[in-house]
Amino acid sequence: MTRPDRRVAAGALALGGFVAVAGLVARRRTDALDLATTRYVQRVWPERLDGVMAVASWPGFPPQSRVLPPAITCAWWMSGRRRAAAFQGMAWGGAFLSTVTKFFVRRPRPSPAEVRVVAARLDGTSFPSGHVLAYTAFYGFLVRLLGIHVRPVRLRRLLQAALLTLLGLVGLSRVQRGHHWASDVLASYLLGVAYVAWLACLYDRFRESHREAEARRTAVLNRP
Image 1 (cartoon, rainbow, N blue to C red):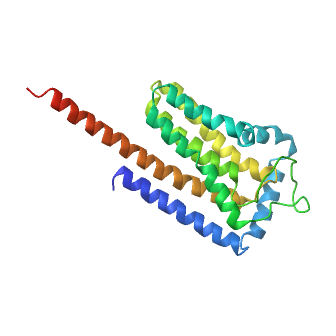
Image 2: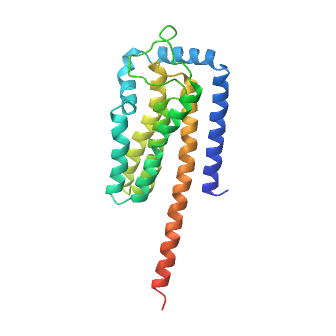
Image 3: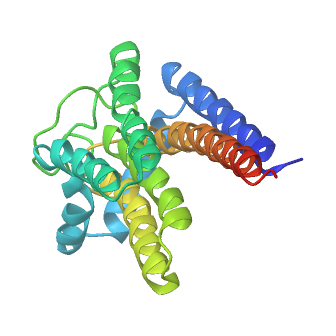
């Protein structure tokens, strides 16, 4: 199986996992486990760590959630990576996926009567987590682009490690702060991974087509 085929398969598997979790949530099969998980996370990661969790969630709240993605997309464009900028903009579509899914599922958020809920500006319903889905789609694809286009190895690895740490922490933060259930977070990671996998596959195909076109053009110019 080629690398693009593996990505398509991974995306399909992740999407299947999302559908399975969504089905369980719709039938309220995850309620007891979600409640137990939130209480456990809040016990293990107590209130004194709220600062770390707040930092992890900060990029996902407006106005920064509406400024950072277009700023990063523009940075790719200004650097001359027009294709990367276009696909990075498409990666921002994870936020739209979240909005559409919330409209259909309409799951209530955790209640202060059940778990600790940190006060915040929360819009919409609980399933899926908009933070996690948007982060996974946008910053997950950014990790891929950095791997392709950033040449200094140390800088590339540093940036990728920072983004992957953020991706890991944001899911934990949404549960620790009582803003989402664990199944909301899991479903968001799965849908985000599916989106990134297919987007990365499409991006690589465009790059390969461009290289082949350039090779043909060069061959024609060099023909005696």
